[in-house]
Amino acid sequence: MLDKREWLGIFSAHQRRDFQFTVDSGALCTIYLMKSRKERASHSKMVKIYTEIVVENDQGKQYSKRLKDDEVLTTTMKPGLDHKEVVYTAETTGDAKVQVMIKYDGDRIIMDGKILDRGTLKDDKIYFCFKVMMPEFYRTQTYGDDKDKAKAKMKRDHFRITRPKDRKPIKLKVYEEYDFSSKELAADGISKLEVEMTSQEDKEFIFSTLDGKGVLQLENRKKGTKSQPWKGYYVKWYRPLREEKGKEIKPLVIEIK
Image 1 (cartoon, rainbow, N blue to C red):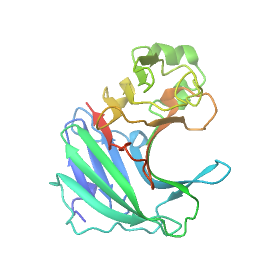
Image 2: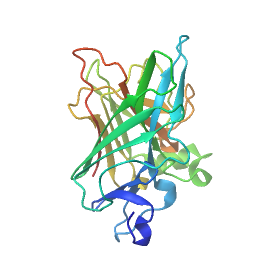
Image 3: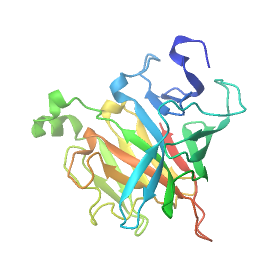
Image 4: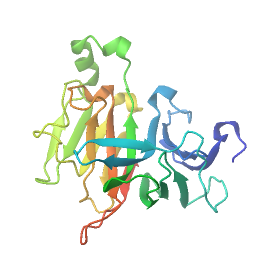
């Protein structure tokens, strides 16, 4: 691993003016936003990206298998800050084995992955998944119980989703409550998400797939309930173990600018 204090436990890192992206020895990916003085923003603004396997049983219920608690990624590459791309494998609970491929392309992080071995997971429908956990970017103590105060602070923020079926951006307000699982919004997935908040150090996050046509899942932190986007949400990318012919899954793209 790398020796400098901020890189302790880190296998790979990508540094830009607006953010740092890291992969630690346990295969956890993290995005750190940067302040204007070339310092990391507070830990409460970290964006964590988990590698999981999602299993769907005969009743249609899904559950996740995360990487093992003591997991250490396996790779032939040396740790470094100068990678253009990284490839590694890791194991989840249930003894399934996954491979992760990440490319660094300027302000874009291009992430791909697949299941190499299903281990003891027997259900027919299993998926490789990147789960991006967007945090609570504003302080609940300050804005959680005061909608007028939140509106005044966040009125210039934007949260835009584009759905695959109509390709028309839908503008949402980060201080209003939404259920992303509703048919009116994102029940059938999204092809693009663009989010800009003052509390994101005035940075914009853009989520899509490499061809711009893939489907991502947007979820509230508590699925099936209404919540304000500034309080956090999930963006998920899936690759099934058995891909349908003619339906190529393109990598996840996260752009920060």
